[in-house]
Image 1 (cartoon, one colour):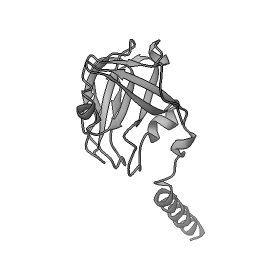
Image 2 (cartoon, helix red, strand yellow; image 1 turned 45 degrees about the vertical axis):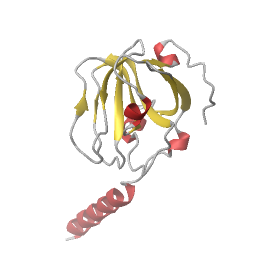
Image 3 (cartoon, one colour; image 1 turned 60 degrees about the horizontal axis):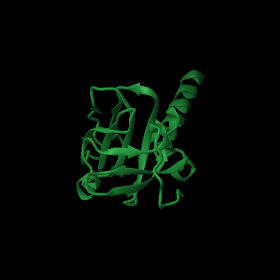
Image 4 (cartoon, helix red, strand yellow; image 1 turned 180 degrees about the horizontal axis):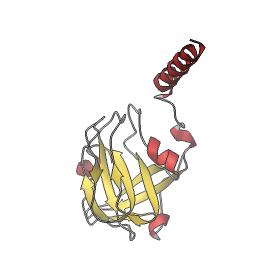
Length: 165
């Protein structure tokens, strides 16, 4: 009988942890932040990005964010290029996902991903990073496949007119 009570208490504790911890995670302001630029065929676009530089930060990503400023994004870098798979579980805003090769070239864009979807979003070629921007940002800014992301990860500097927060 004592064991059953103990198990029930443990299950209740786990359920409460899951319910209250669902929104738990590191505050985005604690993620490293930097400026990058994207050279399009028309102009250069500037974004301040949070950098998901650990597996824990990559798992958290932009989950539970209700909005994101138009000039912000999140970069998911890799030490070496690999096939990257993403999803939108617990992500409340639509995102444009840009898959970027080791030279900083955008090789695929998955526009306006569906919030809270469990569908896997991937590109079959190895990438050095995935950049998440607000859904529709690529269309508004005329960002397309072949455009160049300038950032230290890709061996280039953005020459930023903006300062990272």
